[in-house]
Image 1: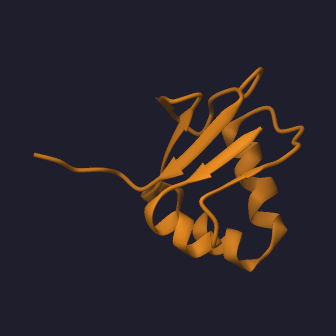
Image 2: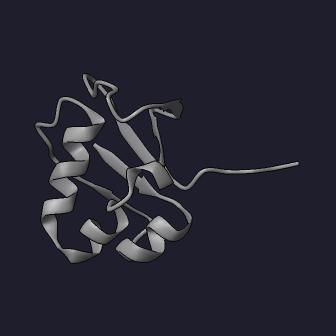
Length: 81
């Protein structure tokens, strides 16, 4: 599965994307796996209310299933005008 990080999430983790093997069934389980990797991931995912997630380029929530997902992207909330 491809994991993509944007904005300050990318800065905290230190890479824009990575490919991982996971048994996570939901985005929340994936986040728990990532947090357990090392400090920089724990820091990036310390406050999920400050993050948004997309699965296969569709905005979703952290309870979303990952069955068959090819990409998960994490990014801060966006504003625009």
